Length: 205
Image 1 (cartoon, rainbow, N blue to C red):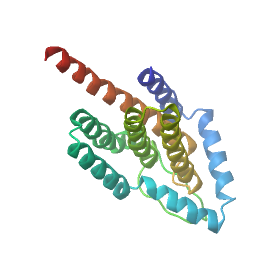
Image 2 (image 1 turned 60 degrees about the vertical axis):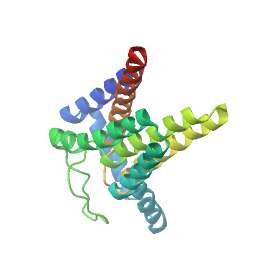
Image 3 (image 1 turned 135 degrees about the vertical axis):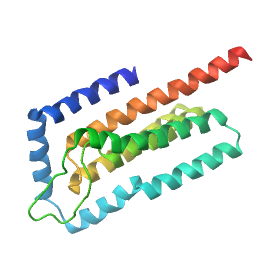
Image 4 (image 1 turned 180 degrees about the vertical axis):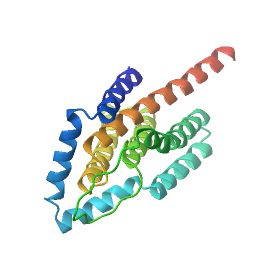
């Protein structure tokens, strides 16, 4: 259900981006609204937050998580990590090249970003890694409030990263929403594949 729903949502957003639907007008209006309301303090805070989805930070978190899973001999969870994060990160440049959408531009821009805009790489990778960590926490904890807290923390991290990308002028809102949808779809597909392999090997054993 997550895979189908997220894939449908990504398809709808991607179609709007490709055809210049009214969503694109809303994108520009939101980008302009944030650009004219930036403050030095909030800008610094958003730059800190966006670094929680930087390639260096995410790679470090993924490597530490992988080492912990290897030490505990959670082989299927380690396989899921290897499939979700590197596999998802490899899709980002391919999707950007496919849609070839330019980033928001302003005459008095205070930050300059390179590359294409759709989907947001930071947001997609954050969705993948923090979403997967929430799944691991959900499996590790038994109390409902601990599981709920893990999901809320992951949701909050993705929300903050996505907001920071729009605020800083790196992406449009649809770039962020498309990245979340693509991330959830890949996460659901990867976890389903690993779980299917686990169950199949269990039956064969």
